Image (cartoon, rainbow over all chains, first blue to last red; front, side):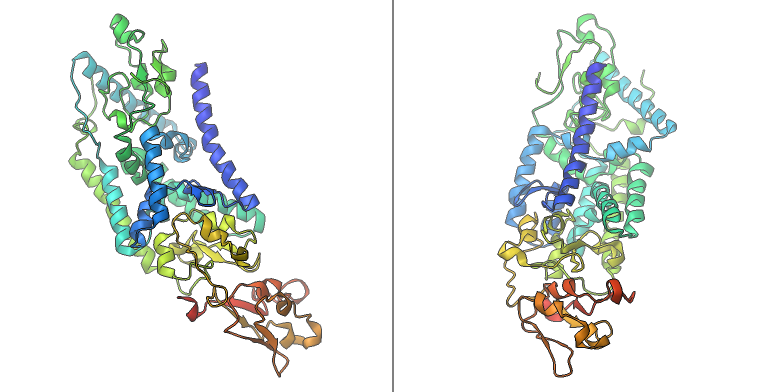
Length: 288
Length: 214
């Protein structure tokens, strides 16, 4: 339990730190930017979806974008979809608006996914995940890129809940600093709420940024949760322990990748490791 | 054992019909958002940071990351709001009430910080223009109450010698010399404090200029 507190607190602090850095940029005019692009001068990260969109929307190859995009892809190859649980503000927003009913639904879905993974293990079913996992998010991603190419501007940026969260933060800041009211103060939060609270399954079913990350993450080999089979209760006494499967918000099976979704969707949140009753899952520094 | 409904257990990796339809719906919505963005772009041209005068290029590349606005040492780069048209929301626009553009003495920090080169290098202050200074005779104190009532801060502020006093005692803008840096609007005392008229305009304002799109 102690460790669980530590990892989840750390994740919250990292997400918060990005807002603090954004705030410092706002206060000191450092050009630090937001999570869409964060850095100093030309040394900066960039949202990979935004980068792709600006290539398509501007109908041109932009050398700077290609260089930065290559760096981001390298980061995803190394850390997988860690952005989703460590930097993205959306899960935190969803938590704030989570009703008891929603929490119960998620709990039920987690239990269903866990029992599916456990049944696969018990029955010795081999789950052949595709090399590259493709689902509804990738269709949305395709739509975003096609729309950007047709209309000549980064369309998804306009409604991106991550970008709009930071935009709302900036508008609030300016409202306080300059008393500058704008309809954006209402419109942006409304779009965010519609996308990620009303459409509860945003992250798993819709988010085109997650889709893009998952494509690159299919080739991620590092920082996977690693089960120590000398300790795991399934191996030591055949117990039908489902603790890690139950804890995984992505419906992955950390034990042997027998879950509803493949290991490439791992967001490196560390919940499986924290939930293991015998501390058999080493995360994030060891691999099987 | 597993009481999960069939559709929640897709053949792993493969796409179910339901996922395809759901995703297609999202894709269609995004195409509609793109069309609506263009259709309700709003009227009037916004003043863009130096190097972002090609409106199509700016809109095509800007990912609304806020770095140009944040980087501007003079606070002259502002952010457009939904009121400027939904497609323009969060893109950079110039606001000379808070500061003016000194082109960072050739550093162009907005362009340097732009991750997508939506603001490009190569703005030449001697020939290119952000906009054009336009005198508002109903606000300019030289017109309103005689030249002895204004100390002509705009003329002192202009680093390009673009402002002079005409034969009628009013302000004259040399359109060839003005590059729309906004120093005059920033310095103008009209529509502030005692001379406030609630029009929201100053005696001299930078306005969009046809020739500014290069």
